[in-house]
Image 1 (cartoon, one colour):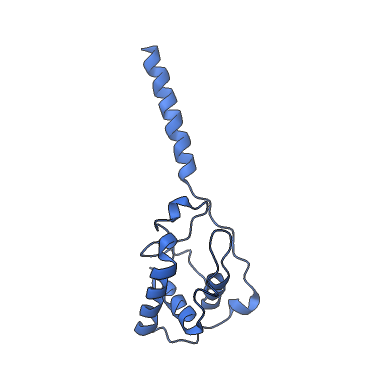
Image 2 (cartoon, rainbow, N blue to C red):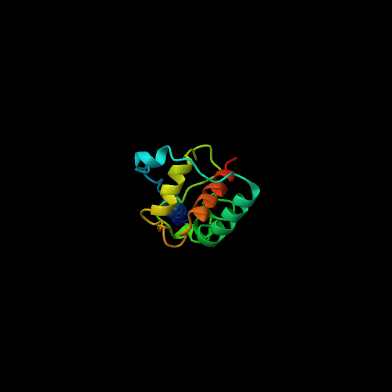
Length: 134
């Protein structure tokens, strides 16, 4: 009986320690230059732009951010930091801030300046990201 209690305590401790490692670190606030904070998207936020942005998102962002932008992509589990949830009410970036984040990246997020070189494509991605917010 005493042996069973010891094994039960050890099992509970192991499970407890395992779950503490599952929690992802929340990212630090972004340091975004002032000119990006007020920058406006020159593209209309229309269906064509959002659809173009979705294609770009599926190619470059889905692997970490997931199909619906909630941060559950196939690579997300291997990241140290939670990739972010674009549908969250905490997702409050301006268009210019989203452009800066996309182009520059940081930590585990690569920059996309050369992978998404066209301004129209970059702004279409911003329109799509904004469309994911609930």
